[in-house]
Structures are given as structure tokens and as C-alpha cells.
Amino acid sequence: MTQLTPPGPAGNFYQQLQELRADFLAYLMNAAEAHGDLVRLNPGPGTYLYLVNHPDLVRQILVTHANQYHKSAMTQKMVGRFLGNGLIVNEEESHKKQRKLAQPAFHKQRVDAYAQSMVDLTEQEMQTWHPDKPFDFEARMNALTMKIVARTLFGTGVVGGTRKVGEIMEVFADAISGQFRALPLPQWLPIPRHQRQRAAVAQMDTLIDQMVADWHTKGQDNGDLMSMLLLARDEETGEGMTRKQLRDELVSIYFAGHETVAKLLSWVVFLLTQHTAVAEKVRAELAQVLDGRPPTPTDLPQLTKLDQVVKETLRLYPSAWVFDRSPVVDVELAGYHVPAGATIYVSPYVSHRDKRFYDRPNEFVPDRFAAGWEQALPKYAYYPFGGGPRICIGQSFAEMEAKLILATILSKTEFKLATTDPILPEPGATLRPKNGLPLNMVRG
Ligand code: HEM
Image (cartoon, rainbow, N blue to C red):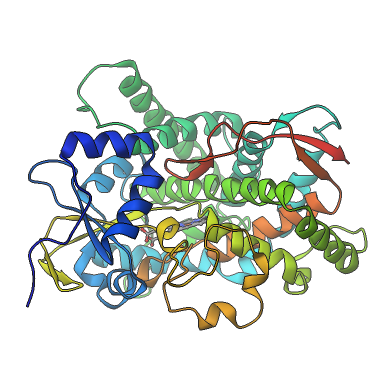
């Protein structure tokens, strides 16, 4: 029999909001541990917010019953304001159509062609680092991944330079992260934050218009993602994307494609500073496979230790630590009735630390990803890139980029933390180290 309300944390809306704002990750972990597979959170009267906490439910929502769910109204609104109707928030037939048009831009052959730019830009970045001069590694990784996505999306022709686009993206990311920190204020309020956000959207539109216009004057495939998207044609109608849709896809890929990777790189390097024996093994493997030369995509299958470290880092600190869905019809989950329009949190962070499926869930143990182990896990106990029809379109891009950057950096440098403060995760649009990652380069 379908029951009405799943269990959830005690306390009224204000108490829960306080807890949530004090430590969102702890709030979700505690809720999951105490209340089982489906948890009802209490975000306020008349609102329905749930957390799913079992691989079978994650699979039901993301894969087997994906057509019963959309992104939540809040995500549509917050993300849509900046990224328009790009892949991240698009739905149903239009999502399917756009996904099909964009997919070829992410095929392996195409993505492999970006490898050289990824390595070159990493080497350029490393030349700016000096031994014994502490620097914020996280900030540098943001700048690097931003340059890489700009180069791969737009070729060399980023109008206004990557710095300008970077500033705009920061405004977007800050606004989108805001939904995890405070209740959103109505957009019509003429506060500086909203004015800044509107200006950033307008500037981004102008930049993209200029880049598309520049492209049309040459009108050819430059090997970049924008060329692919501009040349993409619907199989049946032969039609390309509208200018607005193209803008939305470019901005969405730009947004989804840099911070996520930058945070992954930061967490890997942080964890290696704490686990020097693992770091040694990674370096030994790099020395053996690369023998001092820059990495290429063909080296990656041999870098098994590095692969385990990346996977284990994405387990403990998944960049996309939570995302949401909203049922478009009333559904049943774990024997409970969930009304249409409810918001359901799906959290890789919570799932990846589930004691039922992970031994020593909070410890960094890359060896657990030895051959065959992941395949033996229940499906959707580990899903840093999501699953089903909305699985990350950039997964191969991200995995290759992260490994090439790490191979380039770790084969030449070693780091030590340049702070005695704990490095703690801060949940926002992505999961980032709260006060950045101050490092000292000790070999370079
Ligand atoms: C470590 C890096 C990354 C992680 C952990 C990650 C994670 C994810 C996850 C979990 C989703 C699914 C969200 C959902 O179902 O609601 C997603 C979607 C997406 N990602 Fe990634 N991502 C990463 C890198 C990238 C890169 C490099 C790109 C592009 C170059 C990218 C582009 C996208 C896009 C466009 C979507 C929306 C797909 C759709 O809904 O059809 N991501 N990503």
C-alpha cells in the first residue's frame, strides 16, 4: 500500500533551514543515515522536498522512469536565467533533439583532437608557478580549465579574451550557487547583485553574437565545438539550431565544462598531499609510462593508478554533488506517494558515502577501484556523471582533460599544503574547497 509521508528530520522549517545553512552536506548525510531510502526534508509549509538514498531509486529516477521527471522548477528558473534552454535544463523532445545534434561534438575522435591544446595550456600555466611561492591551486585550475573550454569551444577566437568570459561565468556560478546559501529574492528587486547578473547575461550574449558572426565570415569547420554545433543539422528536417538555441548550448557547455573539472583537479591534488604513498605510486607510474615526455590520449589506458585516484576522488568529492528532479505526474517511490511538482534531490555525495555499499566510506582508498570492483557494485551506487538520457555529455572530455592535466603536472611537480587550516568542502554549484587550496610547489 502506498504510504503518504516518508520519514525525515525533526524540527520545523526554521530549525531545518538553520541546520541546512550551517552545514548542508552534514544535514543531508545525517538525514540519509537516520531516515532510510527516501527522506522527506522540510523546506517550508506546502513544499515537498525529498532526498533519495538508494541505488535502485536513483536508477528509477534517472534511467528506468526518466520520462516521468523534469528538472525542478527552482533549477529551471535559477539555471535557465543564465543558461537559457541549453542541454542542462531543456526537456522532452527538444532535449532529445538538441542532445542528438550536440553529441557528435563529443565523440572520442573529436575530443582526442583537443588533447594537444589541453597539454600545451597546462604547460603554459605551470610556467607561472614558482617554488616556495604559495599560490591558490584552485583558482589556477579554474583559470586553466576556463582557457581549455574556451579554446575547445571557440578555437582561438574568444572575443574579448578568456578573462572577460571568465568574469561573466563567475557571476553566473555565484548566482547559481546562491540557491544553496540563501532564499532567492525576487528578480525585480533592483539590488546591485541582480543588476550585475543582468549585465553579465547581456555581455555574454554580445560576445557570443560576435563569435558566431566572426565564424560566419569564415564559415568553415575549425575543429572546435562551436563549428560542430553551427554545422549540426537535424537528420529529418535538415535544419540547424536557432541563434538563441546555439547561444544557450554554448553557454551551457562552457558553464558545465570548466568548474566541474577544476574542482576535481583541486581535490585530487589536495588528497595526494595527504596521502604521499599514493602520490609516489602515481609518480612512479607516470615516470614509467611517459619517460619524461608530455602525455597523449594513447597513454591514458596505461595510467591505471591515476585512473583509480581520479575515480576515488570523484567518489569522495563529486563535483556535481547534488542535482534534482521533479516528477511531472504523481509517482510512487520506495512505497511512498510523491506528488507531481515535488523536488527530489539526487546526491552523488551522499550515495558515494553509503556504508551499505562502501567499506571505510569516508577514507581515500583508490585501490578499491581495482579491476572488476566497480562492476560488482550495485548499479547507481557510484554515478559521478549521472545516468540515463541526461548523463553528462562531457564525461569523456572531462576524464581525458583531467588525466592529461594531472599527468602533465604530477610528472614534473610536487606540492605541500601552504596552510594548517583544514581543507573542507563547500557545496555550491560545484563542490569546492571552502577557502581555496593554498599550495607550495616543492619541486618543479
Ligand atoms: C568532472 C567533471 C564533470 C562532472 C563530475 C560532471 C557531472 C555531470 C552530471 C552529474 C550531469 C548530470 C546532471 C543531471 O542529471 O541533472 C552532467 C550533465 C552535463 N554535463 Fe557534465 N560533468 C563534468 C564535466 C563536464 C564537461 C567537461 C562538460 C562539457 C565540456 C560537461 C557538460 C555537461 C552538460 C552539457 C550536461 C547536461 C546534459 C543533459 O542534461 O543532457 N560536463 N554533468
